[in-house]
Image (cartoon, rainbow, N blue to C red; front, side, top):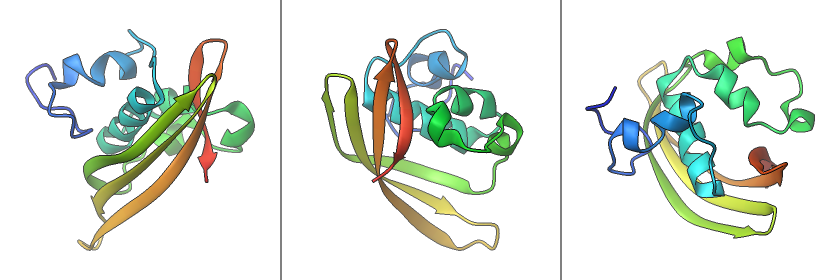
Length: 127
């Protein structure tokens, strides 16, 4: 996918943006990078392993890589509204546009909470 734009709406090429995270060649250094890469994983589908690896194990519940790999919505774009990072905690407020299976458009708005464990940022929950 080197010549396509990244699904996370950064304006960068996939290989210079979320690709290295999804291919496990890099680890997100910021909560914003992790949020963008997780959105791209959902948008592209087939990245359930990555999503599970970036989900805090206590918060992941019964989620599986297979379940997370399914592409249930057609994600249309991501907009980061706000983010903050303080020590090993961070939040990202975002809005993601999608089209559902019936062709209806929608928006998902969330404030996501992240924590850093052993140098790795993990998604915890929505606030």
